[in-house]
Amino acid sequence: MLAEYFSYEAIAILMFATMVLMLLTGQRVFGAIGFVAAAAALLLWGDGGVEMPFTASWKLFKWYPMLTLPLFIYMGYMISESGIANDLYKMFHVYFGGTRGGLAIGTMFMMVAISAMNGLSVAGMAVGATIALPEMLKRNYDKRMISGVVQAGSSLGILIPPSVVLVLYGMIARQPVSKLWLAGLLPGLIMATLFILYIYIRCRIQPELGPVLPEKERKMPLIEKIKLLRAGIIPFAIFFIMTGLFIMGIASLVECSAVGALAATIAAWAKGRLNFKVIEDVCKKTLGVSCMFMWIILAALCFGAVFDGIGATKAIESLFIERWNLSPWGVLIMMQLSYILMGMFLDDTAMLVIVAPLYVPLIIALGFDPIWYGVLYTITCQIAYMTPPFGYNLFLMRAMAPKEITLIDIYRSIIPFVMVMLFGLIIMMMFPQIALWLPTTILG
Image (cartoon, rainbow, N blue to C red; front, top):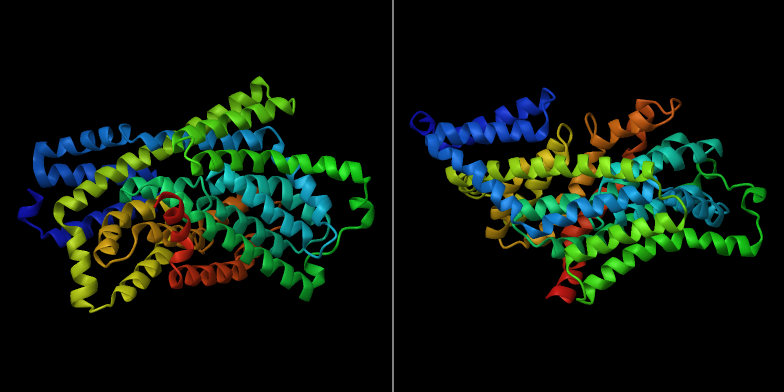
């Protein structure tokens, strides 16, 4: 077998190299990861290796919180496809248009609302690029400013609950998703606040970046302005109903996701926008995204089982602590730097599958909280999403943005927002209580 000719360290490096090579050639993430894991299992343990993917499959099917995944994705797409997000942006347009950079600030608020109902960055990107970008360009907002706003705002979807990335982390790291979501809430809101402060201060210094809207666009009777508030009430009401039921202990996490999906459907029906085409589009997108993540988790579990089997975690621990003589904080910083480096070439799911089976046991061994580390990982993913040359959000923006926004504009637009996110990451590393206070207070 393979172990007769190579050391386990060499096998781990070979698995990494093969998987990264397959990912760089454009193979599907779950296909590349699953193939490497299955091939390594068979070469290491012969016919007995066949049991690994089978066992991983049943572990996935028996994981009850996984039911939240399709329900939250459905809820986000229902809000988007039924036009409720458009109404929300119109409200921000009127209420924030009189402030310098007001539309950009309103866009960030909208991104927070979309994030709180979807859990995916791609949904926020789609809404921001199709609704907010054209409106801001038409009103002479700086194209680099608004490109960065949409990219940074959409990245909040993987931090603010219901974050799908934190679901994946919880599955692979064997941590409760409820604690991870509560841990991500305050850091996500703090990150959004930092973005808004940057936009406001920058537009005060350079008013031409975000001009005030003409009064005729904002002027309307008071009764109409009050009616516009209803657009903001619906998405926030859905979010607070879900979280309220969960925090008060009335409903479980899965039950709350079902409540959210039902509430989004009722809201679309109440608006008179629930028809067969909307239902068909929402169900197709939900099925596609849910199946993609299911396959990725399945491949990740198999890959992690092989890594546990060859003792790669102990090898990494020995490298960082014994050979390089790093302190626990030095190891943590090294991990974050490796995420940023990998994020230049891989997406968040690929990074998570590659390093979580190695890093999470090491984090626990070093005395760090794995819930807090999940938040750090997710913030680093946000940074990696916008890091050239292959940042995920960069290419999404290029595909969705109007033609006057070039790839160079997109690259330059993210620099200040990445700096803000690095500042936020440092704050979370220095003060773990920010992430841990809410899950500790509510769940103990």
